Image 1 (cartoon, rainbow, N blue to C red):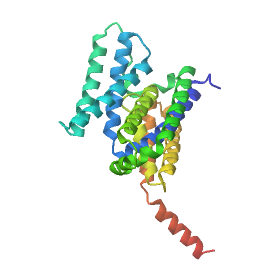
Image 2: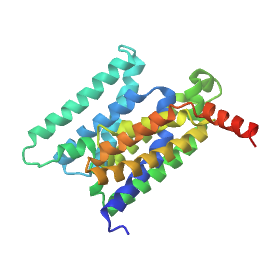
Image 3: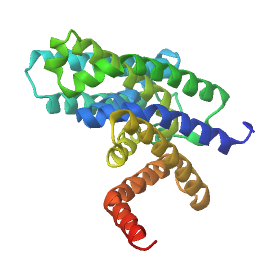
Image 4: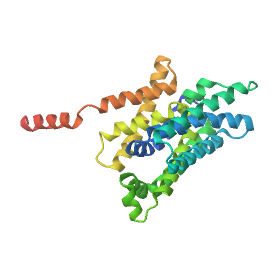
Length: 274
């Protein structure tokens, strides 16, 4: 079954969506969308460095994204610039430096569109092992820090008063984000990773009754977007990565409907017309 490239693509997309869902919920709760964008832009710089140093791309992307996250946390402590200004500075600087480095490496033939928008149809068995192995590790760590991370998200001061160290928990969370970006880059690309993190979580927010339920629904909606996007890409010959994001956006638009009101009216009609 795994000899079929389309089956591998579906499995890879589902693996990324399962991990991106819970992490995306915290991004939405914390209003950190631009932060995730900054880390994903740093992935291109990681790719350039991996080609220059001839080391593993996934490892280099993780190291660069983690370094950007730590640098951002340190700069925030100084308070010389606002968070938005720091995010914009680091995001566009990392993306530009990565593109310039790739331009200087004329001996390297690189599919830039594949880096920016993903090449999920080229996923192999080793990529699947990386996605599911790394994804399982990320979910285990997230489950371990779930309570303190949620407490720090709701009220950092109260969490600190209760003995929780918000800065340490935040650092672990940013490292988890860097890990997800590293393993998801081949699936949806540098520019679309943040969309896969945010859109399913934003859709699940209107359909859930609690944080844990929202995380599960976000993962399921992400899986649905992957399957729908890939089949749409196969049917209409469109780019696979952007097609997944378009499918996720369609799911979000559907989630905007007042489902509770519609279901309540339907239930009322059934009760009055047995």
